[in-house]
Structure formats: C-alpha cells, structure tokens
Length: 108
Image (cartoon, rainbow, N blue to C red):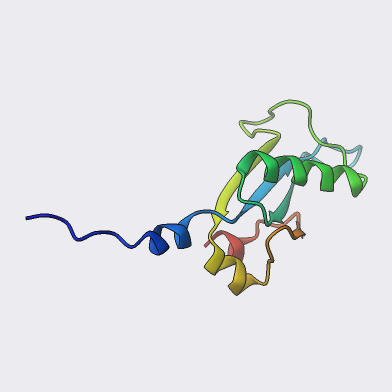
C-alpha cells in the first residue's frame, strides 16, 4: 500500500514564518537575571534571533554576553507558522516586544 501524495501547501502552512525569541538580560543592581520575549515575523531563525537582540539593545537593555543558569543569551523558543501569526496579528517582517513574562499565548 502506498501513501497518498502529500499536499505541498500543507507543508508550507506548517513551515515557520516567524519565531518567538527569548533574550537573556544582564542582572541589574536590584534585579536578578531576567528574560525578555519578542515575536519576530521572519522565517529564518538566525535572523529572528538577531532582530530580537537588536530590539533589546534599542530598548536600552543589556543583553547577557554568555549563558547563565543553564539559559542561552538568545534562544528561539517556538516557530510561528503563518496561520498562527495571522491569529495573533503578527505580519511578516513585523516585530513585537512581548515583555518579561513568559508569553504563554504565543507559545501554545
């Protein structure tokens, strides 16, 4: 028995069109180390990670230079397929600061 031919559009709809990226911040005088989350509408994972770092720096945040507590300084947490991006209102090429709380809605 042979498998039915797969629909190429189905594979494209699951391919990442964006990423949720976490950036590890340096601890401040009063605060401990924290992560900042970003939604990046770029299909390429490495580009999305760089855009997230650039966003953190433009917000005046200091990105941790090395891993700490088992966490990488920049980590792509979840791919965003086009369907999920549309549902969350993220356009291709758009970038969004999600704050310091873990963005559960974006990660499910």
